[in-house]
Image 1 (cartoon, rainbow, N blue to C red):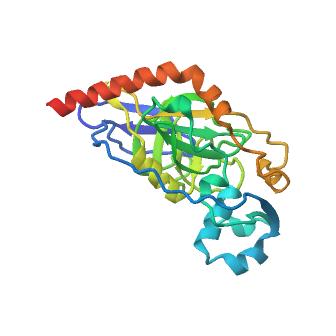
Image 2: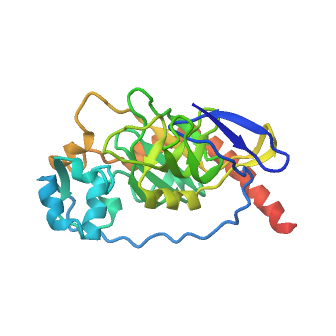
Length: 295
């Protein structure tokens, strides 16, 4: 579907495709100042194990417990609106830990120590993670592209963002906290319904709280002119495959809590083909920041 993106000032109108996405005016120049983001203090649970519960029965007792709900929504790759429609839900046996311990990504990745910022989207586990200097900053669930509209994989960079956009495919679809990563195809991450399986039109759907965090955390591109990207945004790697004909992969967690674990070695292999490009673009951004600081 088509979408018009107006770039303020001397920028021209670009036409892009959209994933259930959008039609709105955007300022493509990143004028944000870098901010310090402190790494969270995480509590490790005594154990990471899961059990299967009857959904409505469990929710009747626990729906007002924010800690439990946050973990159950993440583990089931869903949101508060859709959890009640699931007959069976995966529930941790110990709710004392930070969400990072119940999802897929490692807390530290030595291969990323030189990388200021990077975000990953894992198709197999339907989770995302952000890192700064190799340390996990934030992670959560995602619902990516459906079988008919699969999310492309590889290295991308965050481009422009908008707090809310309206789909030209259906004007009832409002996409909040939208951050584009593929301009010609209109692919990005944003808040939207998480039914608990890959269901989007190529984009990476997020819970609203996660979409807001990523919206503020990632960097926009900087344009040289209407056709030239001068500085790329935050590196974004989308990787892996999803078996759409098999049961939801997170159901395996009940018998094997490590079934979807992404090891440090595995993530380093994902990064390695793109490492030089990531560092090259990072150096350009840092040089631009240094010039701006001296003006």
